[in-house]
Length: 183
Ligand SMILES: [Zn+2]
Image 1 (cartoon, protein in one colour):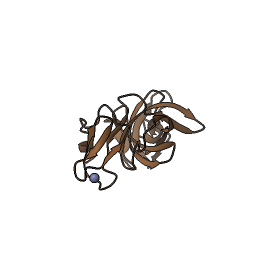
Image 2: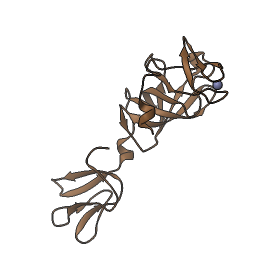
Image 3: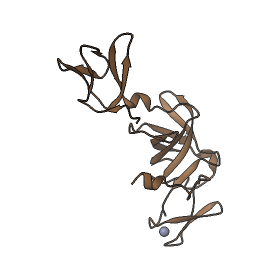
């Protein structure tokens, strides 16, 4: 969120200057935010609105997202979006990504971190692609023991139990600091 980020109850304008618009209210003296979001002053209508981040956080076609795998099905994965084009989002929008064509046994595991490209919005569902080299898993663990894994040609190998597994790895696998970003 930008430096315009505001929180519920924050004073955003004087009622002498502006009326409360969307997601805002007046307390008889000040216009205050009713939700987390960004201040949006409309000087023409003299209203002040709060743009809710959920409205700002729907990725567009072509956007690159980083998210957390929340479900793995036989032909697709579902991902909760954490970053859109490198900007953090808190709205927990989900997208799905078809994996049938990859011919990889364990494309991703639940809780893996993955980067995807948004390809379309169909029937209210956001669809993403994983097939380009930079797309794929950024962080994963061993399926057997939860240990740290290292890439090995097209596979990964656990440094603890030596289990070898497949993933659709991003070309950025292993050289990203987003794990630190996530605390
Ligand atoms: Zn292991």
